[in-house]
Structures are given as structure tokens and as C-alpha cells.
Image 1 (cartoon, rainbow, N blue to C red):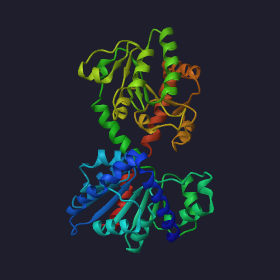
Image 2: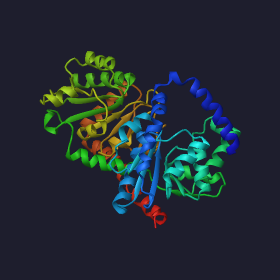
Image 3: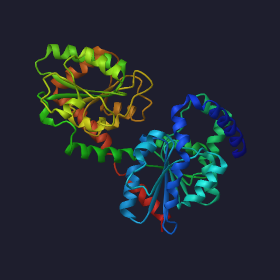
Image 4: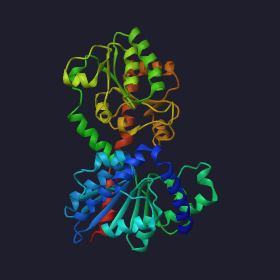
Length: 420
């Protein structure tokens, strides 16, 4: 299988380099791979080392509670972190708990041999979706234990059901020492592969990270709670144009017919100026967050704060009485668990089942699906008028997240046996 994989890989890479001028992020990555590898020169090979690989920022956030727990328990342990995406490398290259950070070179046999020999890891942890066959194959040959954490079964689309992909998954998953799946539903897929590796159920470590950030945000909110004159604060996170259309119509209708108004914090998925101006046309009295932070003031009743920068959403949920998560009228919903960590009712559009949290959150009444402005208006009216309903939904959200905390400690305890 590894031979077939490498033939296919070389063909794919040939075409990727032909098309390279059309992919800005790929160009950025490839331009900086070699320079990033210089960080490996400072490793101390007399000390134990664990290597973590994550594709993007989101996956690396799931690794952080594990890394930070490891560092607290084994202060002399060296942590090496690799990334695939430019955004992950740019934002995490100076991560304080990492002894070295770098772009993982493309999955060619020569690259995998170079990197592994350079690091000489005692163990390797891949996060969620990462399946780099040549790296895994060589690590297994070197008897280096490798682990896949927060694993989920591959999407059962047509491509993944083909004969070649079934064989590939069976081969590549067999290279891991242990696979930690997020719940028992996903473990069934791995057990069906009938290969010799250990499968264990361990709730997603992202819950540990969310709780860490939630506790920080509660004590240090971006917008002071005293800035609001209204009781009902609504946060709409990672919204797209269709999300905005639906929630805007409902908010305007609600605030026009109620004395207790809703103040909104609107957070575009990407704060492009065109989208920001569209929102300001609908809400001409809105204030941009950048101005609010530079000129603190009381936000008018029924007002709108328009977030014109990225990286603040998780902290802004700390102000919310209830929240809406965007993306589910398009490619799929964004993180449902981030607002849930604050113990608030959550709503989203119908295309939300790309998230593994959607169904269980629906089942426990932490999440509401809305399909149009009328449904959203009805929901916010119920949540503001019925305190018992709001409390039930809030407790369901909080319990969903906090009941899953502790996986990082359990995984570190498991890893400890490979660091003796």
C-alpha cells in the first residue's frame, strides 16, 4: 500500500506545483518550510521529546491543554509542534510551551526521514484528522509510539467508500499505537477495520481548552458589563450574509415591539469592509468594536456593536444572554461548544450536522435550529419572556461542556508510561 500511496502522492504533488501560482497560502507555506526547520537545531537530545502535529489553528487549540498539562507534570520534557497551515504557523510559532515549531514538510519519504531523524521523538501525537502515511510508516519502523487524539471516523462520502480509500484507511490507521476517539459511535468504525491497534474512547480535549478560555474571559471581558444598558445581550458569532439577513429582521421586529430591548454584538466570520458597511446600512447607529475600545461609552438600548477584527469571539460570548452561531445556512456551522461553555442558550441554522456537537446538543435542549426570521423572532421572544426556559437551556449548555472536561489529564497519564 505504501508504494501505491507514494506513486499517487508524487503525481498529486507534480500537479500541485504546476498550479502553485494560484494558491497563495500554499506558496506562503512552501516558501517558509526550510527556514522553519531551523528551530529543530536547538533540540537537546539528552532530554525526552514529544512531537505534536496539527493541521490548523483549531486542531492545535485541542492539543494545547495536553501540552500544558505535560509541561506542568514533566518540566524537563521538550515539546515539538508542527503545522500544515500558514495561519497556524504564523500565530503559534512563538507558543510559549513549545521548544520548537515548524511547518511539516510534504509527506514524501525523504522528508519524513529527515524530520524524524532530526527530532528523534520519544512519542508522536497527531490531532484529529492528520494522516501522513510516510511519517507514520517510518515512525512505526523506528518503534516510536504514535497516537491519534480526538479522532472521528472519516466522512462516509462516495470518495471515502471507494476500494482504494478503504484499503488506505485500514493501512494508515494500523500504523498508530493507539487511537483515541471522541465517542463510542466513532469507535465502531475503527473496530470494524479489524487491524491490530488499540481504540479508546476519550472525550474531545477541546472541551478542556474551552473551559480554560471561558474562565479567563469571565474575569477579563473585552467589553465591560457596565457598558450595556440592556439586560438582554445577544452575540452572533461567525456570521455570513445569510445569517445576518435572518437575525437582523428578527432583531428589528423584536426591538420595535418590546420595551425591554436586545443589544447585539455582531461578529462577521470575516470582517471585510463591504460586509461591515452592509451591516451599518441596516443598523446605522451601530458602533464598531475598535471605536468602542478606544472611546469607552455606554451602548445605547437596543444598540449594535459591530466587531471589525478577528480573534475576539470566544471572549465576547462572556457578555451574552443567548447566542447564535453562523455558517449553518452555508458550508456548515462553526463552533457550537464555545458559547455553550458560558452556559447560555444557542441557536444556529439547519446545516449544522457537520458539527459532532449538534445532535447531542439538540437532544439535551442546549441548541435550537432556526430556518427563517420568524422562527428566530419566536425563539428570542420566548427566551426573553420565559426565565424558566432560559435557565433550562442555559444549564443544558453548561452541562454539555463541563461534563466532558478532564480528557487532557487522562491522556497525559496514559502518555506518562512512554516518558519513563
